[in-house]
Length: 436
Image 1: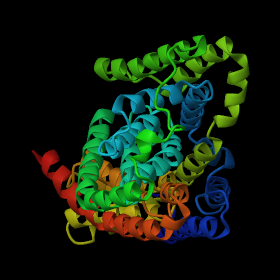
Image 2: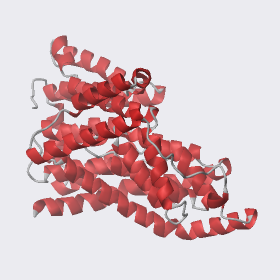
Image 3: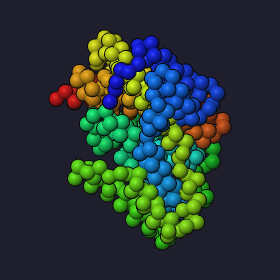
Image 4: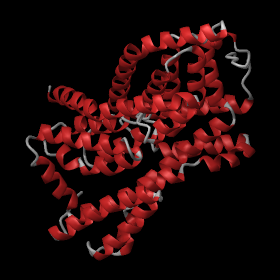
């Protein structure tokens, strides 16, 4: 809920401070969440005349539990080898074919990113990029496949981007199904994968021919250390982890079917507690896997946004967006801003900051709210192949040293093209569907 307890000058000053904190955190490479929470406390007390306890009450404890629970559970699944077993089993099913490798790693990245944290999908990069080189697959194609997979899986109801987006939409009174959000993300990124396959397949053929001429065989098949065969038997903790993972997914699906929202953070913590009792050593080590950094980035931004709402700053921005031409043009503009910022900054921070600021436009009735929020969220992730984002930087670092300059240039072009193409395609399409 928004209010207008502050003057227009205070509202604009708070927005300026909000932007300045973003810039300062980027320039100084400081933790954005800590800076945002501290700034929110000062702005709330000084400009919004809020008691400090009211400012602190704006910190989203539910999101903190959510991130901690999900990342703890999947931290155990990673440490006890369950996630690795799933990846190896899926790779073994492909036989290492170079033609299917980008599709396989798209699926692996999506599956891994769906398991709690989008950043978890990055574990496929150090595996996929060297395999692509040995198989003669163009490095840009593999990088885009992995990024697209992460972008798709990150909007699963069990992963951070999906959880944050649907939670903010729900709090704003916008009906957004988590499965609709996931479906749009999967379809959009699958289309990008098809486009990348069409663009880079010819380059892959040239690379593969050059590799074979140099070594005399297809390296992905003949390299002894590239063993795709998975172990035959699961350990007892791995069996328990698979069962708990099935329960976690079932709780999301049953909740959606029955119209009852399960608290995923609490469920994940409960399942993590079970796994900790089964294997206390791994459970203890998994505490280090809890993504406190992301929890406090989201928490700090949401706390500041609550202060902006108190001051009426969100309404000011919403009216300004509605004043930019038609609501449709405003929606495209907001999505482009989200995409551009995300290409050079934390996507989690962008979603936490810009989804709430887009709510006035989404609730105006002129643009379907679910369509705008979905388009904004997906637009903010399809650009993450940019070498200036965490995902893009990891992909470049995972490539061979002599290929990094070329890959960096190609991914920058791809990411910046998505800044324009993502919103220009998604907004009209989703608005059209939502209007029917």
